[in-house]
Each structure stands twice: as C-alpha cells, then as structure tokens.
Length: 437
Image 1 (tube, rainbow, N blue to C red):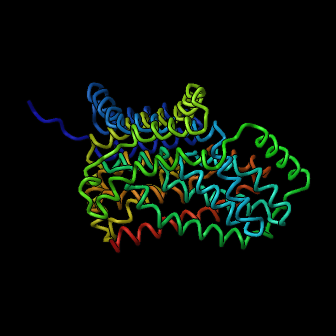
Image 2: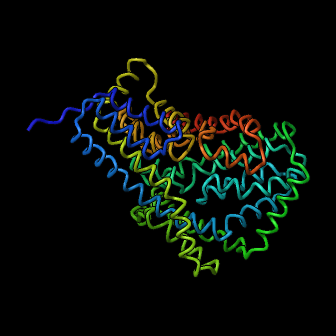
Image 3: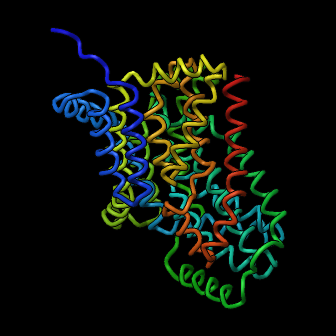
C-alpha cells in the first residue's frame, strides 16, 4: 500500500484565505472554516475520501481543548452570574480612590478578566463605574475605554479563558505555564495602558451628566442585588490559581512532591467554581450558573471545531515545511513567525480567542519546526493576538462602543491606542522568550 502524498501547500493557503474571506463577509465562522478546509483540500490535490478523513482527523485533534473550554464555563458562569466579578471591580476602584481613576479602572478590568471573565463582559461590568468616575474627574471616554480595554487585554493573557486554553493545548503545555509566562508582558501592557490613557484623558468626548446619572443608576441596581462580599467573591479565583500553580511552583522550587502533583484545568476550573459558589451561599444556583457558563462557551467551542478542520488541512499538506524553508531563505528569524501568526489571525477574525485558535491550528507545526520552546511559542502567539483584535467585523468592537455610548467614529479612533498596548505586550514577550530566555 503506497503512502498518501501530502496535499500541496497552496491548497492549504487557499483554504485558509477562503475561510477568512467568508468570515469577513459575515458567513457563520464555523461554516466558513469547514468550507475553506474542504475547498482547500480539493485545490491541494485531495480526493473526496481524503477530504473527509482530513476533516475528521482535524476536528478530533481539538477535542482536548474543547472539553477544557467547556469546563472553564463553570468558573466563568459563577463569576459573572453571581455578582462576584462586580464586587471585585467595585472594591478595587473604591479602595484606590477616584484620584487614581485610570489605574483603578485598568487594574479592575485586568483582574476580573484574569480570574476567568470574558473581556467583553469585563468591560461591560466596569463601564458604569468608569462613566460615573469619568464624569466627576473630567476624563474623556477615549481614555476611559482604553483603560478598560487595555486592562482587559493584559488580564486576558494571564487568564484561564478560552484563548489561554487554546494557546496551551496548541503547544501541548499546561495552562498554568501560559498564565505564568504571560505575567511580565501583562504588567508591561498594564503600565502602557495607564501611560497612554493618562495622556488621552483630555482628548475626545467627555462623559455627560446624563450618562453619569444613568451609570450611577446601573450601579445602584447592581448594589441592590444580593452581591457577595469581597472575601466570598475571591474564593473561586483564589482556589483556581492555587490549584493551577501547585505543579509550576514545585518545579521552580524543586519540591518533588509538588512537581509531580499535576492538576489539569479540565477539573480545576469547575471545582474552583463550585467551591466559590458554596462559599457565596448560592449552591442552589449551580444549575442556572453552569448553564449560563456553558451557553457562553458554545460559540467558542464551535469555532474550535471549525478551526480543527483547517488544522486537519494544514497537517495533511506540506505548508509547514514550505513556511520554514521560506523563513530560512529570507534570512529573518523564525522567532517572529509566532507573534506574526497571532497578529494576522486575530486581525482577520477580530477576536483574540479565535485568532489564537487559528494561529495555533494553522501555524503551530511550522512554529515548532523553527525550534522555539513550546511556552515561548504559546506566549508569543497569545500576545500577538491582542494587537489588532478589536476591529469592526468582531463583536468586541461594538459591545465596547455601546458600553461607553460611543459612535463608530469615536470607537475607531481608539484602535491605534489599543494596538500600542497589545504591541507592547507582544514586543516584551518576543524579546523575553524569543531572544533572552
């Protein structure tokens, strides 16, 4: 029996480009990815039987990531639906004071994103607080939203969110490794957010008294609900972080018992969510909260399956070998392939999560052949996906614009500043893990 010849590289590239074009044309991303994979396989020289096998193998390859993303829905649902995330955000802003408003808002959004809340939801949670504080302190909407978005981006690369799970599983490493390695780039991103937002606080449209009053009303309504105390609100994220860090800390400090004690996000995140729910005295809400978390993860899971189809196409082709040869011929460092793939895929899909999923699925093999350490590759792809991921074809652009009552033109004006924050994290990650370590 003769071995099956790999598909031509141009078929894989054609399939990827077709999928991206269809997504930009507002075709459902899952169908766009499947259609791109099928057409690309046929262009690359595959027959119908090979195409079906390729799609099946590709979708099977992402199942490990799929079940971890679904498991993360338990923690996400608990943090969002219980009021724990709002409690954490309000406590940070209240304790830091209005004089440090930009720092407090950025830090609040960073922390609640880092503990497992999706970045669009994190911005929606903190936005009423931002509008109220911005009106009192004379801070423009542009600066306020940059504080929220930049802080969210920084928190997103050290979080147990779907993008971090995809980065970890794409390079076959622990989620905790990605979270730890992203910490220094995240801090640099937070600092850059505060600096740039401070420079913008007098630029653009200011928060009106009516908007501030509406925001205050939203805060009052949230406060009227039986929100948990801060001590109870942080139980779930603290448990998750402690359990995820046992193995890495054991390796760092050469403690054998801890370094061999491997806990996976698959069960750590649901367990942390349930413990947090019990601590908040809301265990009777477990069905409702987990159902909400599952619903919020559904879109990401479907995109993962679609990305698996594209991954199957790439794996069945010789694209990885061609990319490595091209990099060697041009003479540039192969290190740059990781961040560039993250930047391009996130820009095409206007989504950090989808960008990371596609980048690891399509270029993961080529990046590995360059010789980068898996953790370095994961962090560079991950940070790269934060550079230009908030373009208008994605929902994040519109959700965040509505949260601050901004026009499309005003929101577009924020894109370069968001790119500065994401670019800072990408440069720091690339220098740190691509050239220093």
